[in-house]
Length: 297
Picture (cartoon, rainbow, N blue to C red):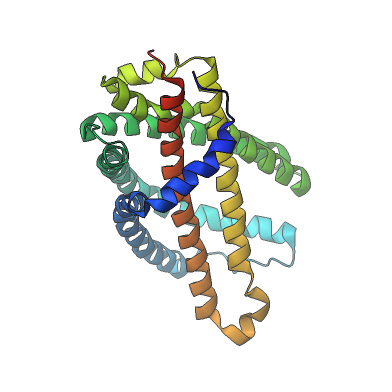
């Protein structure tokens, strides 16, 4: 085994490797955006239709008055009740199609990326689809847990009688969101490294997933470290994108609404491009750590 090295120290070198091989990032962007852009177009088209249907309804609430947080909270709740049946009807057929589409696109795209990244690796899209489906199932469990926790916070701080406690509610939502985000980073590393194990061991997806829990203490520590660092990087990218989109707000009268929308779209595109880049960096890190530790699990 090579001399110990911190995952964060080697991460910079892996970033440089990905910069020198832009085709890897381009492939990651290609398969993700080939799925995401058409899905976003469908969502936007139905969102306009739902907005028009709710606006035409006689039960449609008035515009939200953000100058009064107590009134705004009640108005937002009324808006949620008005939109809920339309959104539920849309998700009843769009969500299953999106899940199937994501598994197909991600299986082919990630298998092609690993085959290109590691010379001599087999192209195994069907096996990768199985791992991506398991990855999505775990994400769904974490999201459901977060949603139920937020629902508990809502019920506890918005009583039927009396004033809502917005400060405590906001604190709980922030705490729960960061907590579940960290939980996802801690739980998702076996599924994240399973494609590398499958590629190196030439085994089935489920055998690779089982091997992921038996990589050794030193190797596992590096994988968890990289996963936590990537989680922090994504949070930083999200904050940076929000800052970019908010920069022109003081000049909205001079710039106009179209300019603000263009800046917001550019900030969103920056976030997804940077996120795709760091996803490639993480895979590259897993492959390099495999070469360092060379476990025969």
